[in-house]
Image (cartoon, rainbow, N blue to C red; front, side, top):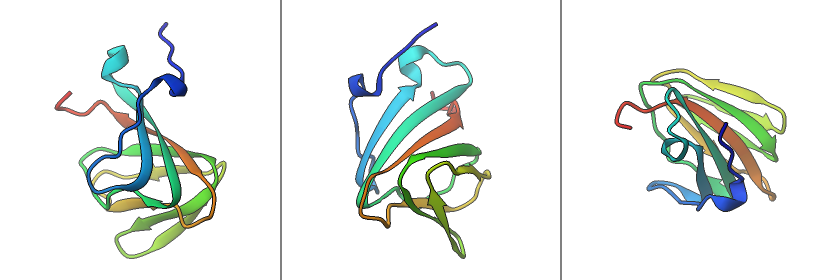
Length: 113
């Protein structure tokens, strides 16, 4: 077993994002063979990059509320929601509230890793 606390992981703000702390909780740091888990804090007005990729991912809203912007629509998300993003689906997470939006995101291990 391996364990890490989110307070011990350095946050990054990937290119194309605004107002987020992105933490690779389980990834290369734990030599995870199949899945990666990330913790993403989106501050009020923050957003991920609008993007798409070949793999699916699952997102769980731990705290707060916001929106997922898709190709032709937006969906409200709130604490407790589980979201499935299909492969090649355009998406962007947006904190449209006045408080923190915290999500856990799980993806298959990227091919380049």
